[in-house]
Length: 107
Ligand SMILES: [Zn+2]
Ligand SMILES: [Zn+2]
Ligand SMILES: [Zn+2]
Image 1 (cartoon, protein in one colour):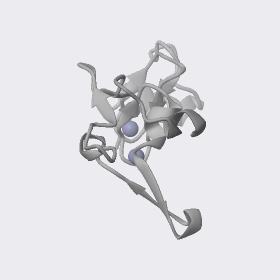
Image 2 (cartoon, helix red, strand yellow):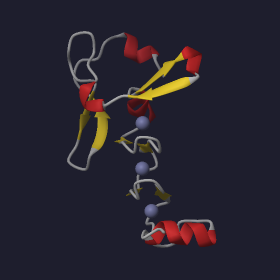
Image 3 (cartoon, helix red, strand yellow):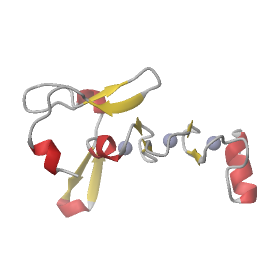
Image 4 (tube, helix red, strand yellow):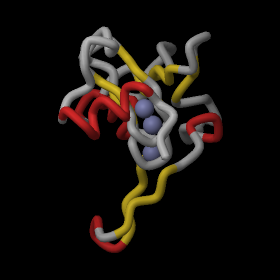
């Protein structure tokens, strides 16, 4: 039984309906978001400012067969600095400080 109005609408009508101001809603944690650039992980339900920030919390094993969802709060670069920081809405952003050079090449 779903108590979420948006999910109930989606199940019945196949879209999120006018109640979703934007277009994106997660059926797992019932978060809605408006910014198209934002990226929601539908597995661990963390929310990221963009895809490159989201990529940082994923670690693949066995040639991509298994994907591990890491805790963004625990991600550190080799210098011990946080890779991701959360804003007041709980959205994870890439740390805006000094970036290691190799980040630029990584999509
Ligand atoms: Zn919902
Ligand atoms: Zn995740
Ligand atoms: Zn979710």
